[in-house]
Image (cartoon, rainbow, N blue to C red):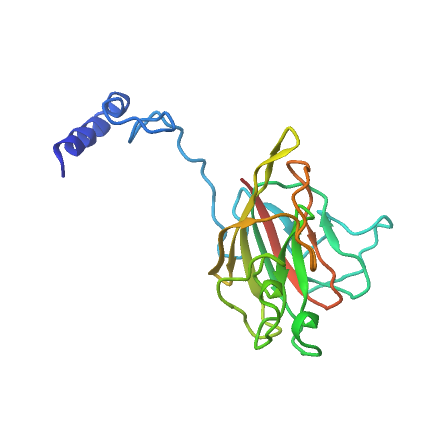
Length: 250
């Protein structure tokens, strides 16, 4: 242990932390190295499993109700809700959050149909449209080649997943998404959106820049929008299931 570290340890032990920190280098953020005057991290209780929401999360769906969701002006949920999950009913609505989100950590679990009927993009296709504009693709990618930027884990139409981490049809899969919203100022884009995605615990998007809204066969530029917007779960005509949906605002 270096002499400086011994001094610091001694000062911390004797309650002289503030004095100790001021004798160490100052960081670009304005704090000194090892500064005990810095605010302590807020205590958050993790979930019992990776699926369970931590104590500071907004739980959007826990299998019991759809109070956090908007699904049409008539207020009628046309998806199936049973056994703790939601299942898309083809030719009905998508599911949109009532709350608006910007920077966030999103956990969601999904399952493609166990019975394989079609192939490629018509197999277990859905998506998470962050801010209603930027899609992280959901698709049954088990032994099912398709165009790479339209397969599961992709930023749709822009960037394929780094690897294919698919489970078999019918098995529950998870996405853990870290999203950084775009920043606009005076009508101009200051910083694009970025996304990090873990698919079944495997990193498949590594702080990937999003080039603009994601659309089929289009590459539209950014357009100024609100700092926070709802996201929605796409109804693409296949009975994809969802469960354990929660968000931590960042």
